[in-house]
Image 1 (spheres, helix red, strand yellow):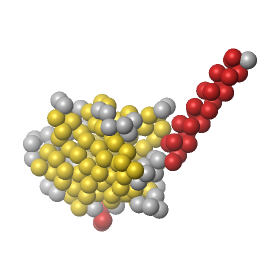
Image 2: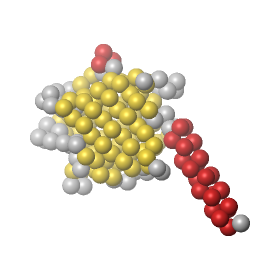
Image 3: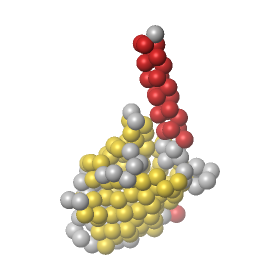
Image 4: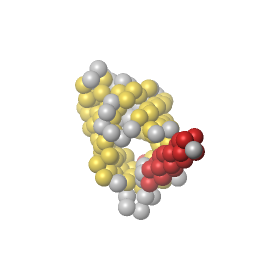
Length: 154
């Protein structure tokens, strides 16, 4: 009887994780809409952003170009709980945190050595078909950068 109970609890937990990920409007693949976006000098342009479930966490993968035109690929896995988790491939920081503000709004911060280098807000449209990401901060060379990127859901 105990083993059936444990299996049932594990199954319910797995379903809860899947439902939670499915309800997060950020989940999926997003493509940059260049015509609706505005980038300041030196800002990184993420052409593709993918949010996917990774166990009880979320994995965020970006591909794009840096402010000086070099390819950029970043990966982050963590929870939207405001805590810092390691990020790889990001010249603006070694950790990133996401905080879920409400169903359609998330804030984030990149840190390098514990100091915030970039911060921003992600707002997913009510219909879930687009999202707007506003970013401000400093790049790896200390220059101020800002951008407003609009993405379309794929």
